Amino acid sequence: MTRRTIMALTALIAMAVIFTASAYFYRMRTFRRTDYALNTVITITASGSGAEAAERAAIGEIRRIDAAFNAHSQTSELAKLNGSPSGEWVHVSDELFALIEKALKISAKTDGAFDITLKPVSDLWAINTENPRVPSDDEIANALGKTGYKNIALDRDKCAVMFKKDGMELDLGAIAKGYAADRAAAIMRKNGIKSALLDLGGNVFAIGKRADGKKWCIGLQTPYKQRGQYFKKIYIEDSAAVTSGAYERCFTENGKMYHHILDPKTGMPSESKIKSATVVCPDSALADALSTAVFVSGEDGVEKIAKNFKNLKITVLLNDGRVMEY
Ligand code: ADP
Ligand code: MG
Image (tube, rainbow, N blue to C red; front, side, top):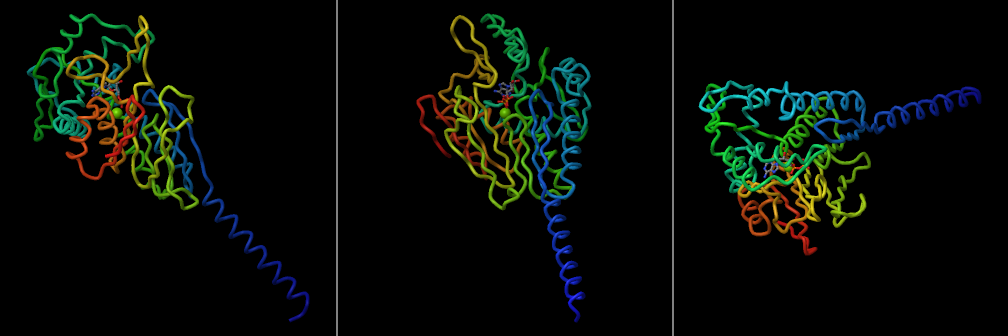
């Protein structure tokens, strides 16, 4: 081989190495997309080829779910069901039926701490609006009369829902973000994504591991402290981690703080001694619903919930500062 041939070959090999390396790094490039839907900020971080397109598809799916299941939009499928009179079967989509059915099963297994029929009560409090207020006892008693998950009848064969009481309305706010995360993650996986983190306002879902091969680290926010101050870190892969806390949506009247997670038994913001409840499991809709249920159930109820469901990890921060794990 002449010197020239050796030099040409060396250059060729060097170019091949550079090309392969840049193709590899392109494939492993990380894309982050931030958007707003489901009344919350959504951030998706993904790596691998097609990450950008997969994120776009995932956001599209989240928007579709928002449009269908938002109880406060006039045009959603849920709003149409909510306007229906008692005693009449209303045909709904398979998807809405399945979500309501899942919610009712969770209610039964959490002793009613999770209840999607609370809308008449939460509307009174109007916490997610600019004018929240403390309703009177009479108003709450009247609204509570229109609630109760046992007052929903389901007909699986006809894919139909019936309200047993007048004025009933459903609010999927405590399960919809988790459900959307499940669906969005499924779409990203279908697009070939093997490493991603979806954060739907505290409803986190991890696909696989991080690009560097480590598990995803999720910081559990210390309530009422600056963002980023964590009382604990947890590590997840192929799993959801959902936190419910009173500190996210609340208002103060006459020196007392009122928040958005209601105790279905009283119609008042839950006064359990729990400051923050985190549920880790592969089913994000379940994790979402259960984080709300655990928050309401308090220290006594949480053990029962942990026993009633398999493959869960629950972390609870109590008002007195203790951190409990189940
Ligand atoms: P966030 O929306 O902050 O993530 P949650 O997942 O706990 O909080 O859901 C709270 C929302 O669900 C409330 O804004 C209200 O619409 C509804 N909700 C309140 N209390 C309950 C409850 N006990 N069971 C089911 N839904 C509830
Ligand atoms: Mg929830």
